[in-house]
Image (tube, rainbow, N blue to C red; front, side, top):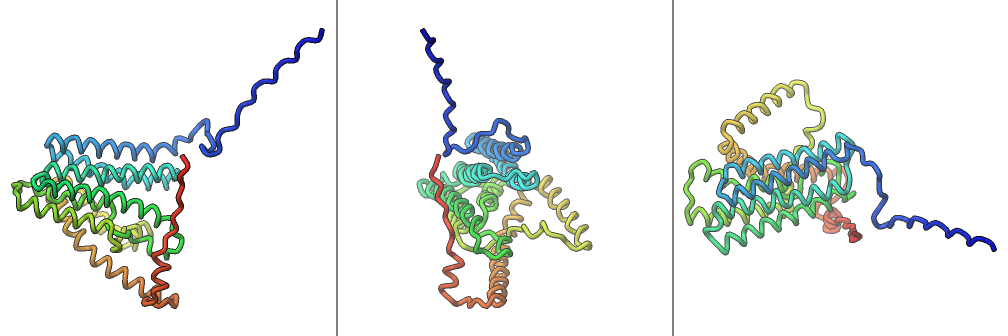
Amino acid sequence: MEPAPNPQPAQDKPASSDRGPRLREIPLRLIWPNLVTVLALCFGLTGMRFAIEGDMERAVYLVLVAAVLDGIDGRLARMLKATSRFGAQMDSLADIVNFGVVPAILLYSDLLHLTKPFGWIAALIFAVACGLRLARFNVMSENPGRAPWQGEYFVGVPAPSAAVLLLVPVYLGVLGVEPSQTLAVLTTAYALLIAILMVSRLPVWSGKALGAKVPRDAVVPILLTVVIFAMLLYFYTFVTLVIASILLLASIPISAYRYNLRLKAWQAQNGTDPTDDEARADRRRETINEDVSL
């Protein structure tokens, strides 16, 4: 009697294609930018905890640290050649929390609660506007129809800058300005203004052009300016933040004016009529790629 044939060994099922390739080992350089993003998220959430406990000064410090880390993670990813779609989405989600939810809770805990429910509505609008602004930023970064120089400008006030601007009433409170009903009403209107600036189409200079080469004579003044600003921020943190916020708000119309001048020059060079409605529609058209796979 012949022995029964051995059963065929079960073959491994192929990995699901919708999950993507599974790597056994991930290079360490891919982890560092995401680690910085997670640390920024932890600092932002901890700042919200201190705001709930009434320690506004420490809460503001932690939001500033989160803003600094937010400026580092992207540059670190590009420097290490570790950019990825996962990292970009993680960064956007962290930004919604750090610069949308956390500043709104800080301001509500400090002043906006005096005008409830209007103060809470203003806080909600700011947080939602932050999410909309970041979603639009992700879409426009994939738009191939933009001129190269347009990458030097944000469309609307970026989320970290908006968070710093929103907290100006908190800075004033730390400096000794007493809270009042009138100040709370003005702060509610101010929060709505910052939310509108975030979702607006105002061009705001991003400073990315500073990464290019600079004249030799400008190196020393730039270094001195950075050192002076860092020292002022260290010794006179909240006064420096108030002045910097005022200068930032004042720079928005100047940035829009410069952008329009460059846009008209670019249109004239490329033979585009700035009054052509069809051309303007083409400039505003954005390609949206929907990825709903999990």
